[in-house]
Length: 79
Image (cartoon, rainbow, N blue to C red; front, side):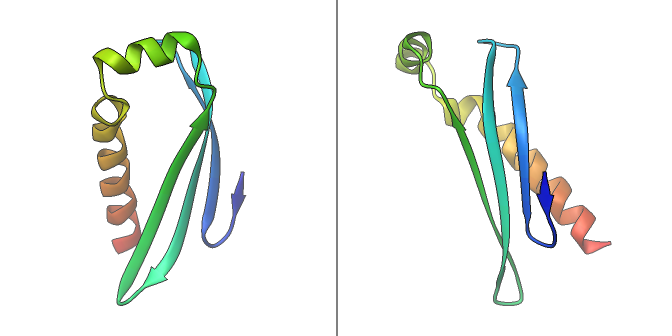
């Protein structure tokens, strides 16, 4: 779903390492001479995901994907 010019909602279905569904929201707001992007992800915090969080960081797992997505967004906005 998108609400131009500044909001995109995504239904994210992860297959690995745990089969799960989450909602993602990207909200883009003016900030100085650029823009600020608020990127949030919401989903169920199951027993398995709680156990997994003891051994790995969700930020470490999805952080590189978020960084790559923000870089692609910046490149597209610069065109």
